[in-house]
Image (tube, rainbow over all chains, first blue to last red):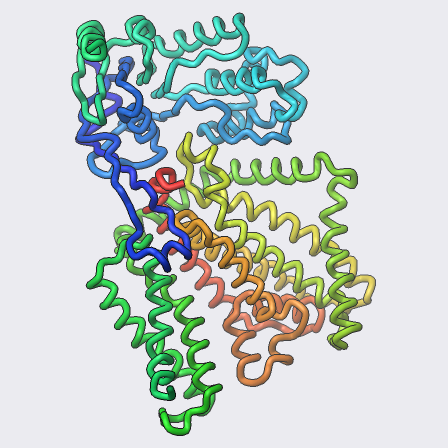
Length: 242
Length: 365
């Protein structure tokens, strides 16, 4: 059995709603109303190196929250998340894009935010530009891009700069029909790489069946079931059907 | 009426402090804590105010012959200190103040700064470029804007108010350049986290890096202005001595101090949605206490002028810069070092507070 790459133990995450206060509120309202919303409750699981775990569940069941806390965007309230020193990235499009700068410069900025050095990005940048297929627009400000071009460039950056652990919130496919196919197959290639540990959040049963080694089912923040893809999905479908 | 006023002057300022404290603690104080903290602030603030009135020559409290002006002054001193004290108190009562914690956070801080420094520089450069990329006069604006400001202030204060400092235009230009850097960075810091929502909801980065990048932008503009200062010094034939080298440590201390204040304001800016307005008001008040247009030590009546010049770090740094560049005097090196040290402490407080809270920021904004 391979080493474990992601180890999540007894993780709970709360949101506090209405916690940002203002002077007027603190003077005129006795108690700052703060409701606590539990997004994830006592979830424990692990993913071995090279494994692909799918997460399924209805809207608002805490899937994205869990994913974001694995990415380190915010910390869980209780429990621990151990990534065993692997680098991690959340598949996010267009992080830190600055509208007034050219595509080329945005590649560097965005890449640096994803944790790569300037040199590594320079090396890959031609690859990214070729993949994005936006032609001369690469040297024009991003604000002049059509929304399709914008997401094509964003996708290429995320797809070309890979980390050990990849967290995918819905398998992305962007752009026109041709690019959609290309991006989908690139995604699949990245996900299927044996050295890469992947967690995919998706609503699409087909995608999960096709890609995942195992599936976890979250329901209202609690882990309902984890295990073999077909069994869990079957139970999930039966549950949702009723 | 008199008795009521007497009670009010002791009791209102700590109440003010309590409101601010509660505010910084996100309105989560329990009733018991409120009583304890009220008592603590009552003692601290009244001791502080009494200390000041002792320095002003009021020995002892006699309710009978206390003038109304004295009471009002007492309350206002209390209110100002009530505004300031809760900040250090809240910072010091965070859970991070243990030796192990400090060591761990310091190592992390140094590593993180090293790791994200290239991004901060790159992002600052990108911001500068995009700021001017569409304007007609391009980067010339960085020269024109402060230069015009200097003309306006020289006219108003030189002609209308008859200010009579030597080399007055240069004098004023140094003031507005350094103050501009400080005030822009601090007022910008309050909204930094909110403004970068797109980045911080998607990936992790130490949040003060965003501030650092913004300060590089402002710092670059300050350097351009200092270029103008050098030209003006040539124009006015200011004698230059080796003391001009002091300018470097002065700017370093200014940068550190601004960063320290900025990190603290940035943290509270996340929780308090309208902190921006308060900072705006406080900053414009401070501008007049900093001697941007005049010499604090000479113009403000004794003993406040001297006190202000020493205890307001920005005022101290500005007048030190003027001494070095214009008046051939050596600044107080000890004071400079002290403010440098205090700035490092401020940075530590701010950065460590950000570390222990930053992962909750995303949930709030």
